[in-house]
Image (cartoon, rainbow, N blue to C red):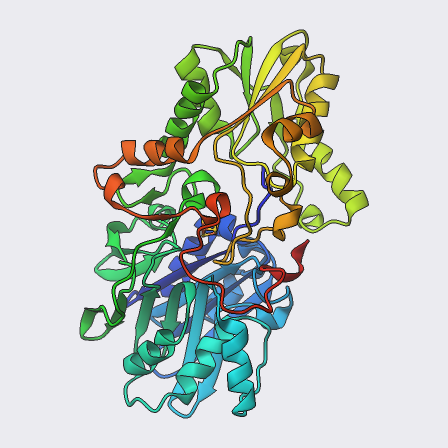
Amino acid sequence: MPKLKEECGVFGIYGHMAASNLAYLGLYSLQHRGQESAGIVSTDGNKLFHHREMGLVTEVFDEESISGLKGSAAIGHVRYSTTGSSHNKNTQPLLITYEKGELAIGHNGNLTNATSLRQELEIEGSIFQSTTDTEVIVHLIARSKEQTFLKRIIEALTRCRGAYSLVFLTPKALVAARDPQGFRPLVLGEVDGSYVVASETAAFELIEAKYIREVEPGEVLIINEDGLKSFKPFPKMKQASCVFEYIYFSRPDSFLGERNIYQVRKEMGRQLAVEHPANADIVVAVPDSGVPAAMGYAEELGIPLEMGLLRSHYIGRTFIQPKQSIRNLGVKLKLNAIKEVINGKSVVVVDDSIVRGTTSRKIIKMIREAGAKEVHMRISSPPMKFSCYYGIDTPVKNELIANTLEIDEINHYITSDTLGYLSIKGIMKAISNYSEIGEKENFCLACFDGNYPVKITDEKITNPQLDLF
Ligand code: SF4
């Protein structure tokens, strides 16, 4: 059940005759990461071509628009606004023409020092066209005195703090870059001898690209007619991969490192059952994102998993940002309880997270109205107490229910009989179980423990993800 909004998804391909078609398919596979706008910029080696609009990938592109995206290299972007409001002018990839020629950029993440950098650039005379933090990177590149495109990018990124997985396109090259702490994922693959980069491996599946490896934190790749070159220009920092990619954001069929997301989520459910068992007749998942954890929970305790909640997949964009009055209706439109499954039963309901608590409260009300004897809520992540500043659309912290209420108070508010959250230790165990390298890796857990891996320098950020709620 989506409660947080995903950030963005990026895609890039160099040296393929069907570049823009493959970019379209890649973006289609990344649609879950952003449903507000989509865009592709391509190049024929001389100039850039673009098509960007508000809407889903299938709404934004048709045969005509894709055939206008000429050439053998392309980058693409799906967006759910994190910083920057949802207007057409904020659609990505951003495209500029500056002294050195044309440049396009697609960004997944959020710069924590974007406001101060923007102020500094404006004082020096820069005029911004959009409200996105991504445009800050563009201005830094345009103002750089470095001689090569790559050096200008590196100089610009040296000034940026926070989370970025980026794709750049010029008429001659594709560049991919990941911030030194690796907040957001970025993977490298190959199809028909051409290199591809994408936010998730799910984008490779559809275009039958072979996964090569992750783009490493702090790595900058340049792909041009000379092939692929890798650079590590930034000082090494402690890795801080977003743990929420495992809990909710990434597609279950994607891999992060060695780990398949579905298997990790199922293991989270098993760990949850070990930490918070329940004596119940059935386990019910909050679809779709709660399903793998519910399977693990049910398997571990030997309780039947039933489809007690049905999700409609055909709501469309109408209810993405509804007014409060419509939002109340929205939950009912998205989910329905199957009375014949629930009536007279003691039910464990498994979800991946609780943000404000209002959705969980409505779900439990729905299950009780369907005749449940008892409702035990189980959450496959720890209590979310802090806002995200690295590209995930979370509300301000005092709107997060776990920031202001204790677990027994949350249990009372959402009207469950019992409530159990997976511990931080449990989540790390679930992630590590599916990879030998798990123990050695470092994760960002800031929305659970408040330990922000990158200091929030822009004090003006009072609402980290601006205007969505
Ligand atoms: S604060 Fe939370 S959502 Fe944001 S990057 Fe860290 S773990 Fe991910």
